[in-house]
Figure (cartoon, rainbow, N blue to C red):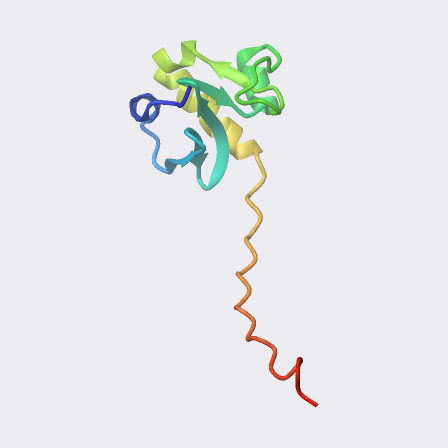
Length: 120
């Protein structure tokens, strides 16, 4: 089941964080804070990336899988109704995550090889 746009809007409204953005991917959403992926919205649930900061705040181990083949994440349900907790989780997790790697520039299209066939 794909995540509703309304759910993602609700998460962003609750957080009220400058720099919080999202991108739709395969019917689900990745949430970014300061350019770092901090959480996923999948099946209308919020999954926070597993960090030591989140573990210290939540006092538990990550236990939920946002999508098949994913590593365990923290499923955040109660924090959606507690904006200060949600903000703290997002900020402290983003602070701990590494900066995204710069993307390599796209290679220019190669010109077609000339005279490689049929020329003698």
